[in-house]
Image: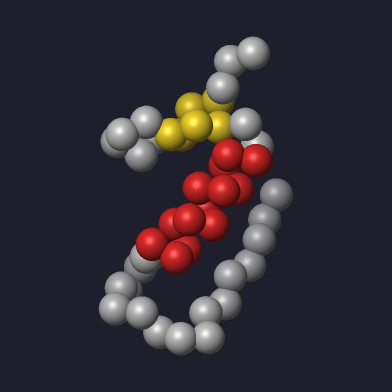
Length: 46
């Protein structure tokens, strides 16, 4: 799976900011993963 993200406005961050992180989080959630407080993604067990 892949997706592209092109901003039309620069933000204050050099790397991933909250806007981009929300897209990454949504992609992982759609694939059945969940994150913990440290930001690690783990596969949900059935």
